[in-house]
Length: 77
View 1 (cartoon, one colour):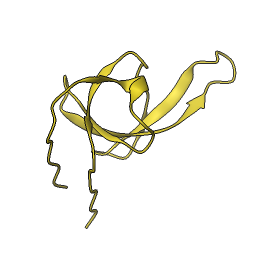
View 2 (cartoon, helix red, strand yellow):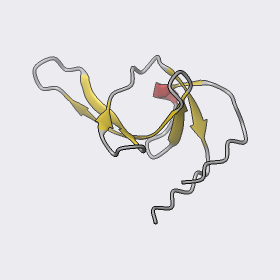
View 3 (tube, helix red, strand yellow):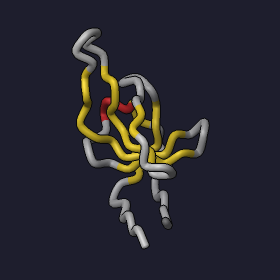
């Protein structure tokens, strides 16, 4: 996977659109924002992103800052 970052401004996770690829600054992980899956018991988000290193579901806090990568092209060989 080749990812080029043209703008390095951190943005709140809740402000990026679904389908946007983003980088987690602290861990250097890349993810894509997906539609939220809500826990029926607590009402909290259970999953809202997909990690691109191992294709597992994860959850980011809405107030977490991430580095969006606009116009990302994902090529899986």
